[in-house]
Length: 365
Ligand code: PLP
Ligand code: COI
Image 1: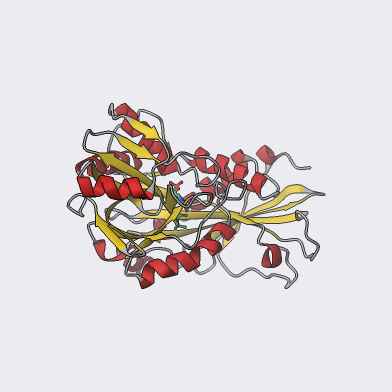
Image 2: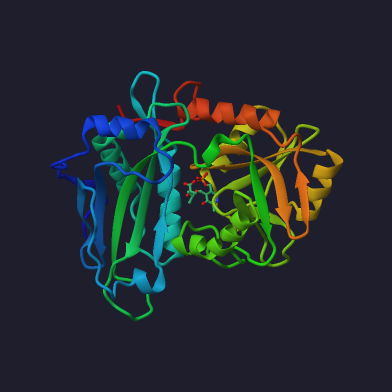
């Protein structure tokens, strides 16, 4: 078995990378998840050989056997993180070790080989160094990094696979929500749930997102941006969005976010906001909050702000909440004061413009 810490990445440079002028044009307005950098990282795993064949190579299609296990039983996990351009032109990652840990925990939940965290980190650093010219410099821009891993064994028996392929691709990104609206509108799904106790809600596995798409499509049909899921047991408590965690801000300046408990994703942005709020002396509780309470607090004015947070969405104010037969607005339906303060603090740290008391930035060059 190979010792992960000794694994060297073989570097195969792209023979015909995207020309600089074309790349600059893309970086001026990259959108989200549509364009990709020149290279990708890849590491193979088999129970016989352990982790091996680590490479940074030209990005391109991969061949798959039609009996590849992931195509049948969805043993797949992923991560989402960003590299930022610093004011002095350098490059930094934000809390990459937190993504490495969550990736390992997701792998364990899905009975996959856990990638050693140091190997995860090395793959990210190597890819970002190779493609650092792809990090957008514009405000709100970053290089979105997508590590993922899937069962690559060619076998139709239902069991944890004995072979995995780990890969990392990267995509220059601007705002996740199009149109630069001041706030987003949410749709409360009462027919579908995302994750039940004992299920895979805390793992970042593709299956969770597949299961959310019908509810997300309903949200779009109803003219909303994102779906809100309620707890599966009682259909009463607010859990999270299809791809973001939620925070609620009250008139007394305190905040609530739904607790982790296995059914929601333990967001790294969520954890960072909790820390920044505590630093600022804000009373913040990880506590179950029901849809009924949310609605009555919004209507009475006790609730002043609601925001969604995640790597892709950063901190996004929620203006309106809709569901079957109801609709309520939050505050003035635009960005709230505390939302804006916390967003500015977080983004300041991520972009290397504010002090970083918790050592969250990892500088690459
Ligand atoms: N919840 C879900 C379902 C997500 O997909 C994400 C995005 O990664 C988050 C929450 C936020 O997590 P993070 O802040 O680590 O990006
Ligand atoms: C992220 O914020 O990184 C996510 O994974 C959310 C979504 C784009 C899947």
